[in-house]
View 1 (cartoon, rainbow, N blue to C red):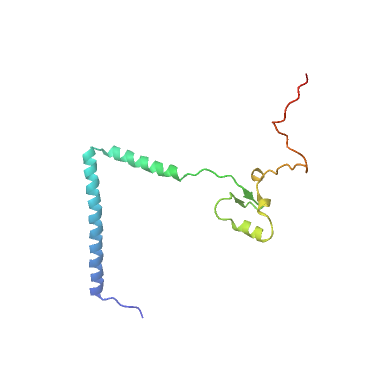
View 2: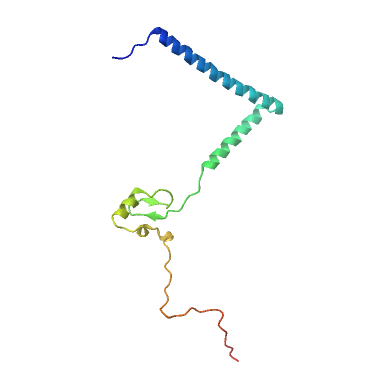
Length: 134
């Protein structure tokens, strides 16, 4: 059975909420008074304030943009990953199925294999003396 509120309890709640609203309004007006003092102290005009606000909004928008990161891993189903952050579920599932992560590397990201020397072959060094043809 739902609880019934009496008129007295509702009026008490209203008084409490009105008191909280007055506190909030007083805090807001206090801040506005402080801002008005700063404006008067520095002799700022409304155009100065508009310009300052537009400049601050522009900076925040520019700060949000990020540079593009090249795709490092891809499969044949248009799933891609840059290699940053959490490993995507499609790659986790493929690895659990036994595939190697390197098999999903995009061509430009694949590491180049080092050329192997034949056993016993020595490196050419610049310190070997040159023989003159004289």
